[in-house]
Image 1 (cartoon, rainbow, N blue to C red):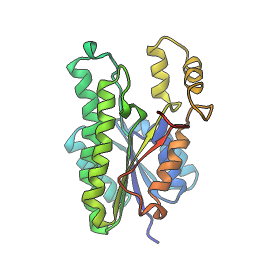
Image 2 (cartoon, rainbow, N blue to C red; image 1 turned 90 degrees about the vertical axis):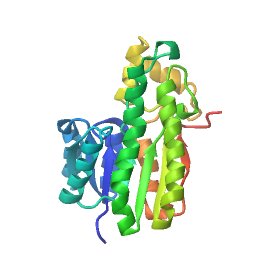
Image 3 (tube, one colour; image 1 turned 120 degrees about the vertical axis):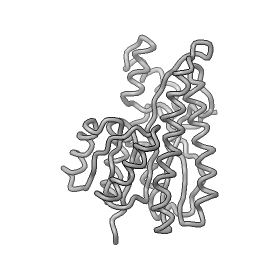
Length: 250
């Protein structure tokens, strides 16, 4: 069988890195895409050391020209992509009255516009091959979260975007789903602890007590869900939002 080619955005670290490594272990060749190409080296090295194929790609997902160039490079150097994981995301947390125009625009541009640009650039390869898998990384913040008006709006938007993709692209053999993690131990959540002026261990313990599974999530927990959704076995699952949260959130 022809090896499937995947692109994972925001894959230099955290959930993106864990997902890229998991998809490589599933037998895919993976384009590890992040803002700065050198930052992708660690993820690429781990994949290659395990015998997989990977390509480091630097691009700002909010810029049309950079996205198009990155996807064309992947197609030329790795192969035509038919799996896309839109994971790239940033936070600029602030209460509404303190949130600046720049805080709002930066998060919207990376988290939501970035997913749109990447999907638009990749879908042509999927429709040509009559097969594709799109997974958008949402968040429990899509349900609303104090101090995250911008971030919550992007994640809720991603879920609507996902459902629309499922309806538009389903006839081409393409599925689109979203994975919405709750608290995952990553560099991003470590930065949250710094902002709250508490240790990361204290923050983890705070969330652990709230989660029925009695632990916080790890990048591998999200990667497992993505791995299933991009598999052949998930061909009849589309337009869904799967919460990786250790229990119900309401």
